[in-house]
Image 1 (cartoon, rainbow, N blue to C red):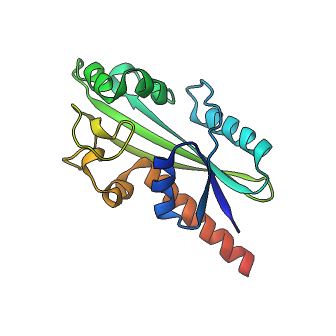
Image 2: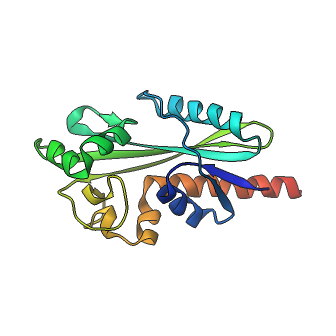
Length: 185
């Protein structure tokens, strides 16, 4: 079975395909609707993608909530990054006493029969002043719990082992393996 990751973000594709090597990329960028509910965002992306591609595919959305802002920006993190960038995010969050953040990655998988499954990855950590040069998005300002370096200071392998995206991708990978075993028996 061929599986496609429908994304306009090559960095996300690289991270997920390190866990699911048979994954192929369809370089499409589904609309990012404005909703604070990650499932609503994923459902919209899945519906859009189904109009373009009839095979098995995945879509992904990662949200980041800052406790000092009552969980915002959540699914709107892309817009924060586009407008104020990692430095602006650090400047904003570091004004407060609570620098904690929660990252949630939701992967939506649509199989050949049109059945949809969701896989969640969750991590927590702290927002810090930008450090490191690798990674993308909020990586330079996020230190996951149990780490002493930002995600931008970790190797790709180290980051994938602890990131919300890595966790969700491993759950999807395990599901795909069980699905393949079911078909074989």
